[in-house]
Length: 115
Image (cartoon, rainbow, N blue to C red; front, side, top):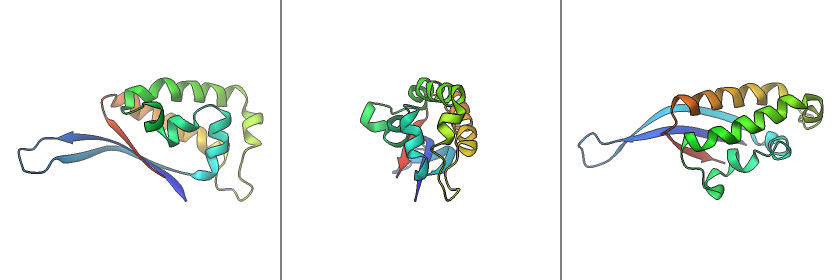
């Protein structure tokens, strides 16, 4: 099982139905949930709607804080690595870096998560 994250915009193309354009997509394993929780970013990443995060710009502060925390204590967070290899610190940090860059590039994009 995994977490799918999409940054998207709704575009009025003049037709009867709205058109949605995906600007960024990411996917990570749920095995990283405990690591994210320990770093204080579980709800921001897995359940943004529950804490009022709707737009990518709202996510930036959360991702920056979590990333700083993860980088500050790498050995501590590596203890949360999944024993089966699916969900490791070494993959989570680069994922957050990419997600953060996408949020900064598209701050008005809406966030959709599928868990």
